[in-house]
Image (cartoon, rainbow, N blue to C red; front, side, top):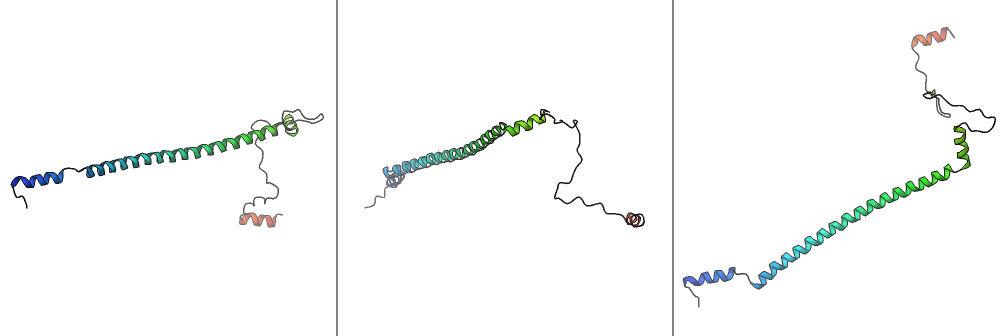
Length: 137
């Protein structure tokens, strides 16, 4: 028996469009799952940022520890007798009989060739210079 009255089809249409409990539970489940995914995703991003920051802090800490070790080595060097004697000579307080000397401020030292290296090649002679060198030794 099919009800063909004019109001029957609209009742069926309303009933078909009305949300069921199963449909509502599905929508709520999808919303909760989306909220959990966004929440856990945000937490994972924060954890990753914290790990990156911790790695940067570790690197900075290692650099500071290396600088501290270099400072301790420098203090140990400064406290040696050899360094103190060298600095005393720099201030003109050497052994008896030593003559102290110093260069005037702004003195430019001539450049020298380090031992074991080839000296700078001479500038090429012009043909006229070569003839003069042959004729006038």
